[in-house]
Image (cartoon, rainbow, N blue to C red; front, side, top):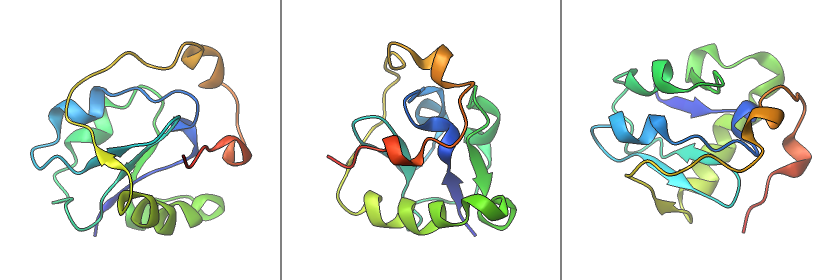
Length: 108
């Protein structure tokens, strides 16, 4: 099992989670983070650190967000690792309250 970053992260991109990851499994895109399933050791530390509740155990990903499991694997293959905390995106507070943001995901 691995952990999966889901929709709530889009346009927020808080990085509290990357600091606690003991294996540097997070990858960063323009407006979203993902977890490399091959690197994740299922430690659960990132879950509590996410201020927008975007991270789920693979077996707990909500039904309507199941596609994020494959998306994390796909994007982690090309996005660069992130290991240090950075500022969230400028309007993260506003975006954290908005649902259904998949169409806003930037891949490059």
